[in-house]
Length: 76
Image (cartoon, rainbow, N blue to C red):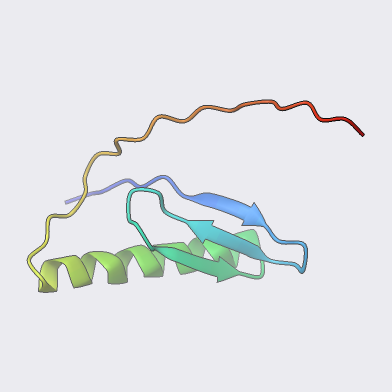
């Protein structure tokens, strides 16, 4: 079975990237480079799914997320 998950990378001030997988709550990892972050994301997703299977929980297949971008203007 092939599953696709959207991942979000956030560049950190201290360096590196935090990776979040919105469809898998709590599935968060980190990498020093984009390539490492994506490798870590793949590993985290695989371990997350392995845990779901072990506990006989449903594996999320489709995202139920709406994504919007808001622009907020501030003074200064």
